[in-house]
Image (cartoon, rainbow, N blue to C red; front, side, top):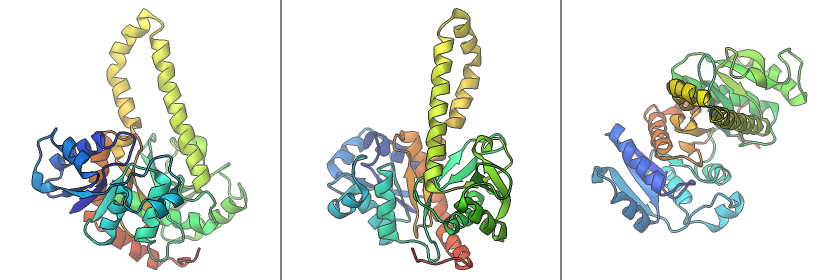
Length: 338
C-alpha cells in the first residue's frame, strides 16, 4: 500500500506531519508513505529521524493551502499546492489513499473535484467519532452539507452503517436520527421526512429519533443529521469538554487538599483525556467520495497523523470504496443528480 500525506497541511506542519509519518512506518512495515510538499523542508525534517528510506518518497509541491484560504479560490489558484498534489496521486493510482490535516473546506471541495462521488451518492458527508457510554459512536454529517434534503440524510445512514461496521467490526449497527424529541413526528419538515425514509431503509438498523443530550448515553452506534446541525453539536461538545477540564484544573489548584487528591486521581484523568482525544481515531473519511481521503484534525500532533495514516491504510486494504460502491448501486434513491 502507498499512502500520500499532505506534509504541509495542519497547524503543526511539517514538523508533526513528518514525525507522524515516521512513527506510522514503525507500525506499518508493508506501507510506503509519499510525503507531498516543499521538498527541501521535508528533507530537512527527515534528517531528525532514523527510518527505512525505501519506505518514504517525496513529491515536490510549491504551494500551501492555508487554513484561512477560501476553498473555491484555492481550487482555482493553487494548482501546485501540497493538498492538490496529494489528491492527484490517489486519482492517478499512484497512491491507494491520502491524508491531510489541512483546510477542511478546501479538502472536501478538492476531493470531490479530483475523485468525484461514488456512483449513486447524492452528497458526501464528513464523519466524526464521538465518545459514548457503551462504545464510541459515529456522528455525521458534521459539516460537508449545511443544507440537506431528507434523501441525503437517508444515504448518510446507509454509508455510516457500513463505515461503523468497517471501523468497529459490529454488524447491523443501530442508527438514530438526531432530533428535538424521541417521538415519531417530532422535528421540522426535513427530519420528519428523513424519519420516514430511514424507517423504510432495509439496509440499516434504524431505532428512531435521538435527542442531542442523549447521544453519549443511549444504545446507538450511528447518529445522522444535516451538516449544519452536526457541526454545531460537534463544536459545542468540544467547547464543553474543554471548559470542564479547565474548570477542574482551576478548582484543583485552589487548595492543598485538591492538589493531593489530584495526585491520586492522575491515572483517572489520564484515561479520561485519552478517551476524549480525537487523535486516537486518526481522522475522518469523507464518505461518498470515490477514493480514500482522510481528514485529520487541524491541530493534529504526530500521534494523530500516525493514526490517520493507519486508518487510511485499513480502508485501502479492506477495499472499502469497492464495498461502498456495491451498496450504493442497490440504493433505490441513488442518483448523481444534485
